[in-house]
Image 1: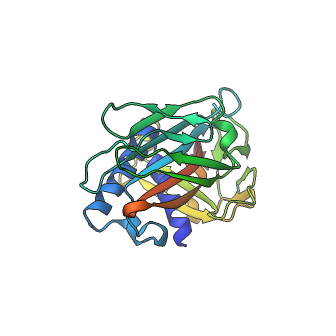
Image 2: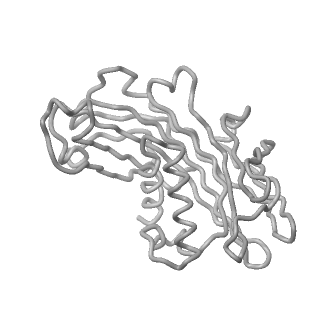
Amino acid sequence: MKKASILLLLIVASGCSKDNSVQKFIEDLLSSQRNQLPSEIQILELLQLPTDGYASITSYATLSTQPFRGPEIMIRGFGYSKEGLSSDFGPLAFSSIITNTISETNFDYLTIGAPGSKDLYGTITPISLAGKNGLPGFNTNFYVPKMMTITSPSFSNNSVISQGTTISWEADSNNTFGVGIAIHYNPNAFENYGLNQSGSTVTNLVRVEDTGNYTITANNLAGIPVNAELTLRIGRGNYQRVSMPNDYHFGLIAYSIIAHPFIRQ
């Protein structure tokens, strides 16, 4: 259950404005850790111990982009000194991919769509942080789960979903975190204006084993009216905490998400 929760939280954090929301989610996490404030994520065993930064590889696609231009892949990282200052730890590398510095004075790197980044999914990937100005680095191996790809249902502008619909994907036998599924409904979305519904948004979450398919249940659609448009997001990922000299620690995060709007029937 604890392993499941981090995955579901990352999938929820991805939302629609995926880059900014995930970035803010992780920055808020690190801030709460440094200040010893209570945080929902901190009750999880894997994330109870604070980190001084993170490095991540993430991918995002929709059913419409999946067979054409493929997923958007982002590698990112940042870190803090023990004084709580954003600090430059030197170059960050995922295998042969060196991130691009986006800050001259602090550890703050970003690489989007780097050649070869897609090939890292489904592999044990060497990750290194060089260390700089007395701040430590590390060299480690980290499993990046296979990229999430929905094989069924196929893309349609008017895809429907109902109790009994089966979602299928390529399974990953090396993925120990399972697969997270989030179904999100917003009664105030433009697409749902004609339903004349009121109330709060609904986000139904479920974690399943990575067997390659899941059949939608009534609970997955609870609180969502018939003919409403909803968004289904499905993803998988991995997390690892790396210890370095002088009591520094970094979190490594990998996840892959695919999303698509459906009409609830």
